[in-house]
Length: 360
Ligand SMILES: NC(=O)c1ccc[n+]([C@@H]2O[C@H](COP(=O)([O-])OP(=O)(O)OC[C@H]3O[C@@H](n4cnc5c(N)ncnc54)[C@H](OP(=O)(O)O)[C@@H]3O)[C@@H](O)[C@H]2O)c1
Image (cartoon, rainbow, N blue to C red; front, side):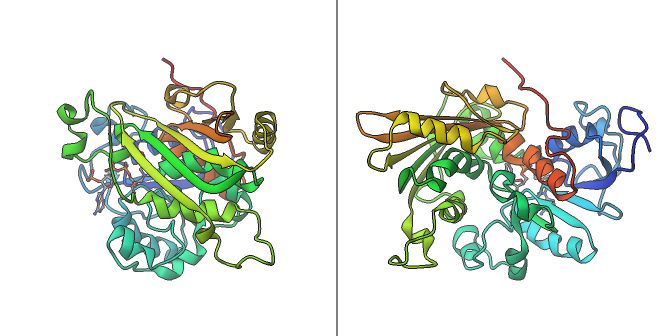
């Protein structure tokens, strides 16, 4: 079998994208077309059925597959649907024996009761929440290897978790955390809305989703897992109540990118050089997370699966200030999904994802 570059090689895993007409789906198509070990065999859509992807989207000239209604033969399916559509379709994909990497929020929360509260519906397949693996390889690599259902993190949680994981896991901070984050407009998807309308969003910056954005319970769930085990004297099994989390998202007039600025008080006696050493060691063997010595720009990560993390200490307040940037469609969505699929199928984790940033 030949790869997309016409070079003979071993058999590739047949994969599908469901659906290919949104921003996350298109980014998957861009990356999968160049992947040496996944063979893109199906792309579904509601609109444009029967038309070739390259005819609808000239930026994907090599993707000559027609859009189809259903997945018929892929072994692994990337689901890039709104969460309510994803929870309806994922169970049947699993019953058909396919492995699923879901980009939506439909399987990220372990607690079914959170879905009515935060997403407005009763979860139709609560048993699957127990088996879904949260798709942040830096935190859940071992569990991903045998996963049949992966729930990729949201873009804000990806940035915030990468920013805060070393500090929480290594006990550097008090668990009273503020995440102030900014996103480009593609984070809202391709559908039209007043808030993403050019005349409304251009030259404007505003917070949204207050007082509680949907990514808050997801962040809390994963941050709580990072806490060192409570002492015998503390209450067990109630890690989430040990964290106070304030999260404020903002929309900024750029196409791609997330910048998360996170604040927490350092535990007594912890100094900037210790913080930096711990962050550097924590991510030393991670191919996609880079601890850098200057405040990162969203452009550093643009078009890539890389995350840039800058931990610093405000000596006047003894507060940790840690910044992280990602591309919301890369490490925040499609790139991360492919990173997870690489782990699931035993491939080198960086395969198809080693592109450098698009700059300026
Ligand atoms: N954008 C990001 O930065 C980002 C980051 C992380 C995770 N995610 C998640 O990834 C998923 C896709 O996001 P996106 O940004 O790609 O959204 P999007 O641009 O709005 O695309 C949504 C896709 O789903 C299809 N679709 C919508 N409703 C459907 C339904 N009821 N049944 C079948 N297909 C339906 C759309 O098809 P039509 O074109 O035919 O309407 C389109 O292909 C979402 O769950 C989102 O939360 C997105």
